[in-house]
Image (cartoon, rainbow, N blue to C red; front, top):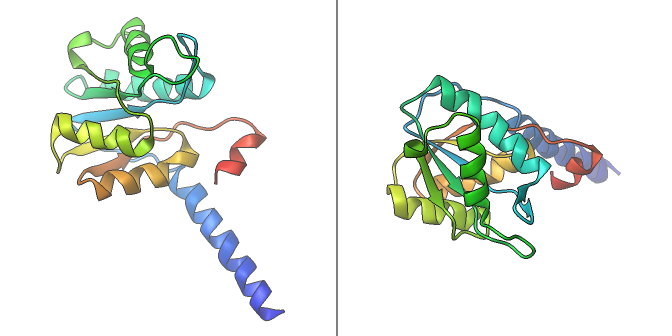
Length: 165
């Protein structure tokens, strides 16, 4: 009985850690921000991807020297790459095209960072912009590939997001 109780406490402690890790915004002006893709509907951005982009835009407007990597390939039922759609969205919201680096070959979080490493090299400080539930895993992968990640989490919406933790 005590074992089950301790196991439950451990489970909820880990869940709380993952939840709180994804909620913390870090104040750091990096040279680069990476916005991770989150799916399209044809050529239209999904609501999750819109939240990520909308989370990144104010920081990009505040730090005009920061470049942004839009990272995401083309999935099933998508007519353009996620990176292409993100690039257009950022243009429409005032981000200069010269600041946008398109990485449009990745199909997973790991390849988002792997292909970005090929563009930037390792050891870069990067602001990671993704959904809060995805932040811990994304930063772990970024560190494993040699980046120094900082968090810029977009809020997830709806009761379904709890399943991602």
